[in-house]
Image 1 (cartoon, helix red, strand yellow):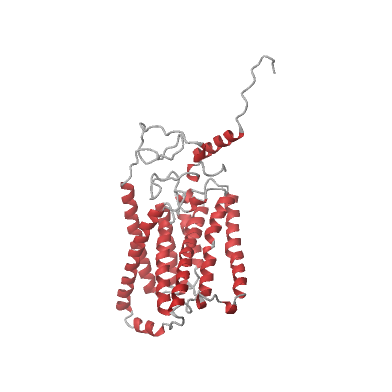
Image 2 (cartoon, one colour):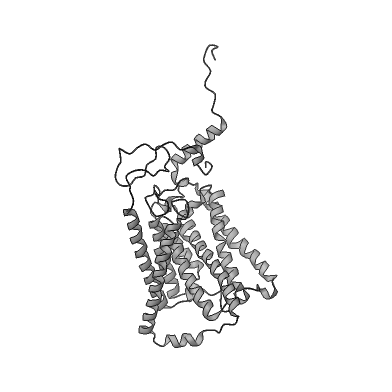
Length: 375
């Protein structure tokens, strides 16, 4: 180097360099760092559809994360719980009694929630909230609206069952009443144990959505959402049993419908709401009528219903989907799509079908805006 040549500027300090890298990564992959909906709490325009969120991830990371989920939540956790249950007197917890087996089964399935989120964070190295929705987290107000719609669809289900049974099987109510087992526990045990089972049932229902409509749907990497929807619906049906007849058909159709609804709304809230309300209603009725002892976790869902129950279930699900789609369209109409959201990083704009050349530039965000380390 010539002596009189001016030395080059020193490299930036390490913290400033890391902050610049994070901002650049956030600009390139906004769906991995920032909410993609202008109001965050409800479905809205997203730069990346729900089923394509995992596209920037390397394929081997997704395979490794899936293997870790299966090894941890499907094999290791159930094995450990089975060993603990064997150490209990009569293999029952005092407060649960005959419902211990059902509670343990629900807890096993609920463990898929932390397994999926930890795999997304530490193996795929992406924001785990993107499994929940394109907003980067569960949209609780939207989940509340979906719960209200799910309750309405559950009322439709029971009305349909009543009408179909009267029309096609008028002798079924008497036979069902005669077959109901008697309650064996006192009411204080039924209420306390039933509350525990209902709480576990909420997490169990959400865990099944995180595993199938969440992880599996995003792991099947195609431009079209349908390959992922079909694969997760088939696996969802297989996980509930492979019995012949209407039960398996109903599970498969339900998986396809809710899979499409997940992509349409950009998150798991709609599927979680329907799943929680449906399972919670059935658990509540069974516990109040028969108590905890008759709860049988080994019963296959594919064999639990006939054609009448399957027809009513699918029809009520179609009603629920219609209500959710109407709510989604109404929420879109309440928005102003004229410009990028306030959280957007510099130089980023959402494509909404119409240009906005006069939109004001987005102010620079401080380095603290980035919540996740660069990938």
